[in-house]
Image 1: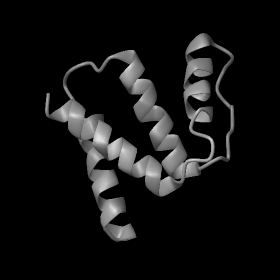
Image 2 (image 1 turned 45 degrees about the horizontal axis):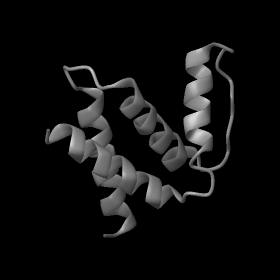
Image 3 (image 1 turned 60 degrees about the vertical axis):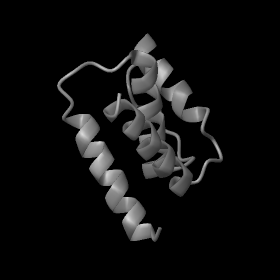
Image 4 (image 1 turned 120 degrees about the vertical axis):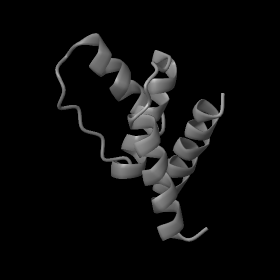
Length: 87
């Protein structure tokens, strides 16, 4: 899979998950968030959101992927999307 194929598949998976009509479990949504942030920003962590609990969970989920490459994060996002969409 070339980079452009991976990017296309990642963007398609993001669009499908974004348009879902049903609710995804919070722990799965945190994984989607973390993979997306890691794929898009890598280890360039920023914590600009408020100091609420939800923001803390999101930031922590992203930090747990420290060192994962953008390509790996995109593949993990796609795999998770396929599992959610095919259940």
